[in-house]
Length: 518
View (cartoon, rainbow, N blue to C red):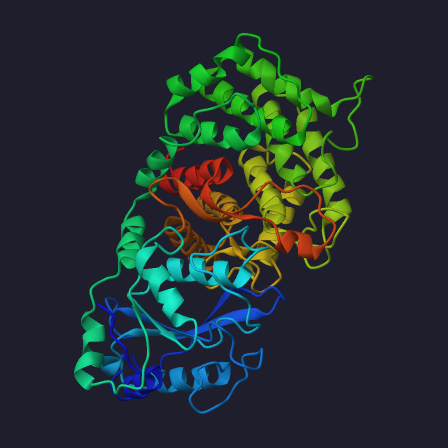
């Protein structure tokens, strides 16, 4: 049933009746417009944890000025006005704030043409519609109050189609009808929206449940022996599904040739290292050593760096963990020497003065996964690298320094952006999961301070649970990305809302890491 009323009256009454004492106004990044203008949301939490969440969505067709500075008396399309309202709401006694209140005062500041559910490639096409649809789905409010022109179309879409594939949300449309106190009080007793119920289901999963759910859907194809499917196999091995994984490896163990012709395939050989360490299989060890021996030239001397690095920061993950495992399994310290040499080579090429990595020399862009790769790579290296080796302190310092630089860029919702230091760039799931693995390893092994990094990990885990569906569908995973030559190109990469093998393997391994079974 649709209930219609005036949202300005709604907010006025909320200020008279509303929950927690002196609550602070929270702020979120919703996304970017086509012109790269940041869309913001502001909110104040209620006192009770069980409180319902109400989102006021204004300005779907723009606010008349093309910015969020429209200060007309009846307009919600003003960030200053939204902050004033929420500050007043936050000053109410805790017992009086009845709902979590969130306001998006200027949902479409450049008055783009919107369609809901959005179509096209997120976020290069329909960027505002995609950003609103996915952000609201993840927030999973119990009620959305859509104010202004364009609200009717949004109402139909949100009540009939699951936002971000999560669930539907009821929408109220404002009119000039007065709002009664009785109707207001019903907000504290709203039925949970289907979207909120689905989020609660996702958050209720234990690490073991999430890991095994993903293991049933990912890591079942190794026809291309590369790292993307390989991470799923490694996750399944760590879960004890050794016999099933062995069947996927059998053709290669029996002699099927592997042409290591890319960094992705090189990193995929880490599967054989994992299998060799767990089973002692000599054929798997042979494949591991064969890949690691690409470190040597024809005279048997170490190269300056491992091949197939393509001048991309990904290479800190693609080669060093494999080399480290080869050194551990064979006792040959030369592989450890190559790890240090390769990492130094990549740092000289790509490490910025702010502690972040540019993805490649083509553009000074701190791509999200392009920074997660080095941290994860070093975490895997340090897990097996001998502390007696002269390069160990340098590698540890590189891991710690990079994480400290990245920690400052974690969003309030626990994720890191597609471009780390560009506010409004979409929250990217696979990079966040990779950083979660690296941080959990650091906490478990005493490399990281618990009081600093445990809260970081807690937010990562919740964010990953929310964005991982029971059907293996993920929200906002950057598609495969090679060298790009501009910031715009990175911002416009496809943000996948679907099943994805890369995210499947990385999130599975994060869940296994959270189980602490190794």
